[in-house]
Image 1 (tube, protein in one colour):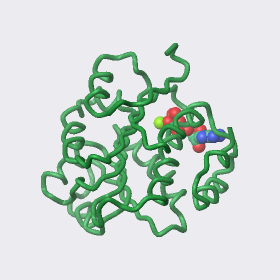
Image 2 (spheres, protein in one colour):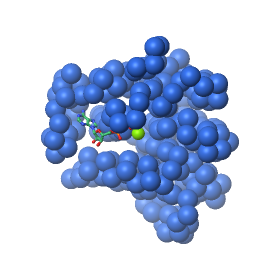
Image 3 (tube, rainbow, N blue to C red):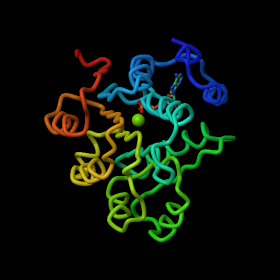
Length: 214
Ligand code: ADP
Ligand code: MG
């Protein structure tokens, strides 16, 4: 399947052109239409299969095409387990947002809390964050998630391994708009903790698992 066949907003098609590929990977071909239809999604495929774009592209499409639920709250939060992954995801997002009026911030543990507070005061549209630090800002009321439209969990299995279950729940509870959509990505779905967290966070999700016999 080609990227031009998903029905993406033209601004997305243009920025995908800068990435240098035309054809979607299997997880992208299966996950993107489900996400674009507004459904919750539980997805897995192996490392290196292109999961990042499988959620970033539908997230961008939603933000371009739909009116925000709130004027100040972030529209999309992407949770990732580690600083390294957060930086990679943020890099891809920035590349795709280049030339648009949409703004994004990176919120990581181990970095200056006050600087992060200031960047949150500018009401970014997208936040890429590690869960613990984002919860610290929530507790300080540096941001509100009532108007959040899209919550994305990348490498949810690793987030659980790293002890972020309570932080994930706190973010889920704060992002309580009934129109919120959730995309949940994991390297494996063959894990009780992953399935329990997925059932807490997702509403009647579509399931897309590549190469695991599901
Ligand atoms: P995963 O999260 O599944 O481990 P990534 O999203 O990190 O995979 O993507 C792995 C690599 O594949 C990245 O370098 C990315 O730029 C590249 N990639 C993503 N989508 C495609 C595509 N449709 N065609 C070719 N390369 C792609
Ligand atoms: Mg990944």
